[in-house]
Length: 165
Image 1 (tube, rainbow, N blue to C red):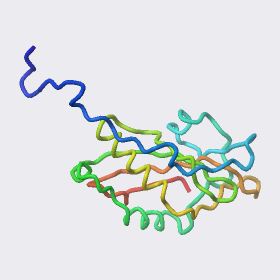
Image 2: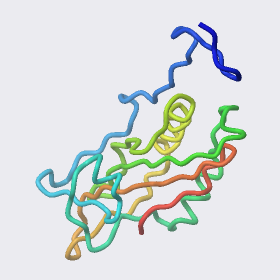
Image 3: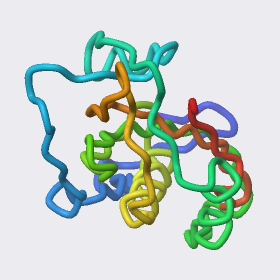
Image 4: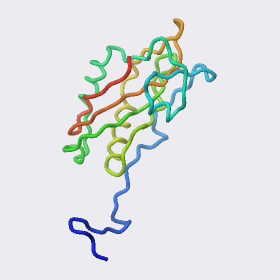
């Protein structure tokens, strides 16, 4: 068959498969209290991924706040050449346990193909970030809590990062 103007046909063997960050390399943390887990509010994509949870009084936060987190990510851009002219968003959820350890990272918004590969590269960088988190608080006590990092990646830069403090 002939392809429409501007399109070409390729075989399944010619389509590049996305590169997935290996699950066994993701930093793991154990919940301090498996029976009760918390999650930051107003994160619909997080609710879709882990279900509804109790909202803490104070969300987990990175020591030094968002400026310190942006500084870390500014030093760790994507190195994939396909990211040079790309602009995309990716959200990652993770757990900050009652001791301030971050882990159990997962991509909660991702695209297909190259976008999925680039999202997995962001996951790899986040997986290596410093363990400088302050745990969430409920009634003055440190608790386990899901947190979300949202990135707008522009030309490989991860400086546009946001989380709910």
